[in-house]
Length: 512
Picture 1 (cartoon, rainbow, N blue to C red):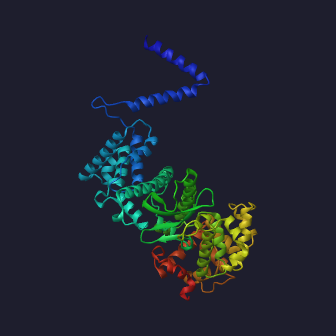
Picture 2 (picture 1 turned 120 degrees about the horizontal axis):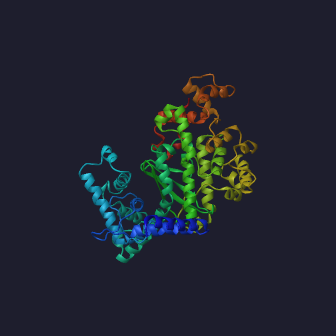
Picture 3 (picture 1 turned 45 degrees about the horizontal axis):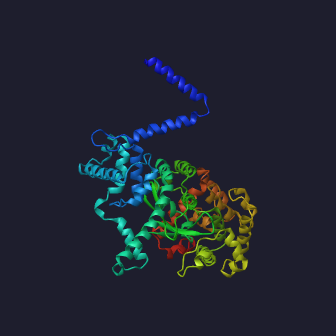
């Protein structure tokens, strides 16, 4: 058959298929067969599998996450079975995957030995090889530091107060399997983050967890816990059913990778639970594209903010928690605000059915609307919440009965307990920065920092307008940057403070 005849016949076949309802199925089945033939192709020299570039990157990414960035990664059957379903070529054997990982490691170490890891040399590589090098560097870059993976198991035993020297080998093996189950939960959560991490890598090259957390009094309020030594944020977060919580640690392992570690769950988390946890982390740290866009706009108006990396005001994982904490800030001292937040978390811990079953004391989460309603006004007053108890119960009941839209900022001024100060605080948490939460601290700040000695309750709003309107619509961000600068000049870096000193962070304690 001539070339033209064959072409005519193929065109006729394709035309017939296009005109049929089965075109889509035919097209994708043809693509799958072609991909399968390509994946199964072996080189004529040794019968070695030809890897897809996407599969190579997938293996390296999952290896890094599986080992949590350790220098001597633990390659095992568990890892192989976990990664295999994620590959385009699912027929790859464990031996082939092991050889591929070994090849990457040798290639990386040879590259480092030759001193080719500088930025100029990396630019000479193609996009795929450059990505392979970057991932390899994260996995094997600290090769001489020891086996962090095994150190993790030792820490696990230490937390359980177990002396490894007193264990039979069979018991040690059982505990190791229990630890690996917990690690698998951690890996599952990281796998959900993979797409988000890719977007974060594209958008946020200068993200800093310390700056994103330690910039607002929210991070000092229970149940948040900031660990200065490891720069880690810890707190309970809700699962998808809203009634259960898990204790998590969040730290930053690179400029674009956040590690979320689960501490208090004894069973594997469902995909819904994993996504719920991730959504809460994204909200607290303001990591959406909208947040990133607003950050850039503010920093373009305020060069000093860009220099400081300032613009992500830390907030709670839910609007409800932000709203209640805004009420707790009203007409009181900062010390008492911290105490009231702690009281609510303690009450939540007592009421939680999952905590009643445990003998050891667990840290309570901040209560949700249902839990607050169950507490009642009298119990809240008994725990020193005073007149706010009625406002808090009323608000929780409206949320529980779905008679208020928490995402609509126009609703809050109509609710008892949300005066101008509480409303402005909550709007700031929702991402509306025009209105400053004005109180005596604002008057003190304008006098002290801006030299307006005659600022008072009558003039403060006009003073605020004259000072901060040039940063519109981000007046509140500019104000808070100045507050953080002032507090750190007097008390030291907020991220390095001991939690026992948090109650001192107020202009009132300086007797100005």
